[in-house]
Image (cartoon, rainbow, N blue to C red; front, side):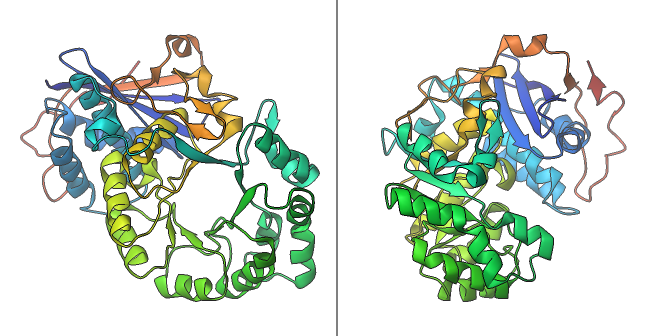
Length: 402
């Protein structure tokens, strides 16, 4: 089996997603995805990675991961390059699952649970304008999740103030004002629902400490990225000031980025984002390493429809998964426009995909849209170890557009 074509697909309406499809000579098509700056990702794929993939056997996905990682790390390994590699890795796992007629979780060691508990991050699309209702009707928002069997949610109570002060200052009065929705939720619903808080990496240490201390009385499930994961010692200082577990971090890239945060306990809950940190291959390694330190993981997902499937395979096959992030405004709102089948969520749990590979594919109806940009690479070329196209290789027409 050999790779014959690499394709990227973007949509003007959902302009943060880049889908990747990898074709093989035996008719298999693997699907991957990443999120954020999709045109930049597509260019990286077609200019750098896709020409390297043509002719390779996708079953050798670990070798391919290392080859592409070493290639991009000539200059740096993060940013668009790592998002591109993440999407490619997911697509390769999808191909291998299809080839062996097994869901990916079986190739990762098999299921360790029959369903995966979810939490809902507020988002907005169509009938679900949950961002607005976090402030407008916080009790109704939480109750609506409970009515669906979802008893863990994540909110962004402090976001309006982080922007206005640049993350450098917060007054006691402002904290009290910002936490009014949370106070109402606790008053009316008590401990019926667990509430996690996301600081979006927006604060400096001193105001972050002031905020987390003020929130402790509300029994917060975790504090996520109150500060950016730039300094392990700063995360440890924050942890000492609060009774709430510290969750980190979607901004950490690869096992090397997570290593010290796990070893030193700076991340009490580990949150890798699969479509940014290196794909299924890398996320499974991060999960297994966290287990060595008895640290739970909670895969990050607030993005497109493929990621929630990829995360599910990690969640079904990893012993130390606490729960998985989902966004009902997305999986109930727009995922059906692009994939079939959709993720199966019932009573606050993801049920396992049963089809080979990822368990989903891009739907044919999606290709009737008039806002798609589809590009492909079919010709092979080679970048040498110092990051330049080998002059002996023919590289013309390595990038094409439908």
